[in-house]
Image (cartoon, rainbow, N blue to C red; front, side, top):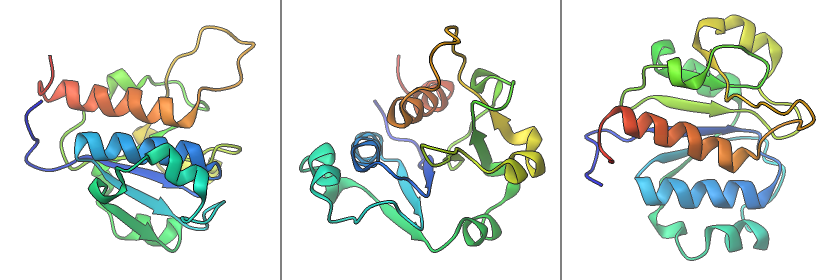
Length: 158
């Protein structure tokens, strides 16, 4: 895989489950993607499950911490933001990603707040699920699905 001129960004808003964040950190390290963690976090960054999920790759992950979601949003260009939620209809494959974009995922138990989805309704996308008995996909899996679609759109991987 060749390197992108500007990295993609994955944003986890108030993540709650350490192994999810650890797995996403590993994904970010492997793809030179910047990981943004929006506080409050549901765990300590010293958590052993977090470290185990990221294995010994933490030194390869560029992590940016934000004190609040509002502060994060205030510092970004709106056209670079992509919100992922099961609460919206447009599919992530309809989004046109460019390097430097922010792929934003909400906390595991509640997702992205409704007021944010309403405010940025034209920037919200979902991953389809065909079985109505399954409530949601794992956060780390969702991050991987959408990130690799963004990378695929750059024709960086075959």
